[in-house]
Length: 68
Image (tube, rainbow, N blue to C red; front, side, top):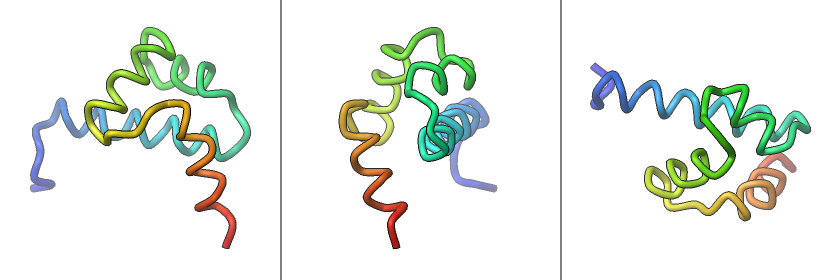
């Protein structure tokens, strides 16, 4: 009903968890490990493949969007 496979949905939720934790001040490494990725590099690869965003730009882009 959400237009994606269950596995894709779980990966999407894990990535969103990392984004949320980064906005709350956690490092990408800590957030990605908490979300269940095997390493920050694994998170970066999955994130780039799914959203086309490099891990280096995540913090900059998320902080910009947090400011209203």
